[in-house]
Image (tube, rainbow, N blue to C red):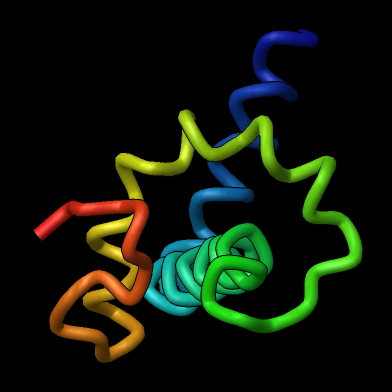
Amino acid sequence: MLEQLKKLARYYDEVLSMPHRQEIARELRDQDDLFLLMLYSEMIGIPNPVYYYTLELYPYMIEEFHDWHLRMGMDKSPLTGIRCC
């Protein structure tokens, strides 16, 4: 009985999110873009009060940097220390 309720809840969630998948994906991408802007803002020249705490995230986020700066409309990397193009 419990397994059937779980299946029903998953089906209900799928039905509700189906027409909005593109909107959800766009919102998640926008949130990622904002996070990356906050992460690299100090290098661009925008003061970042949490720069010290985000510094350790750079190695993990460098792979996404190229896609991010292209989505932001920058043809080349705006950072001299990061060469991705």
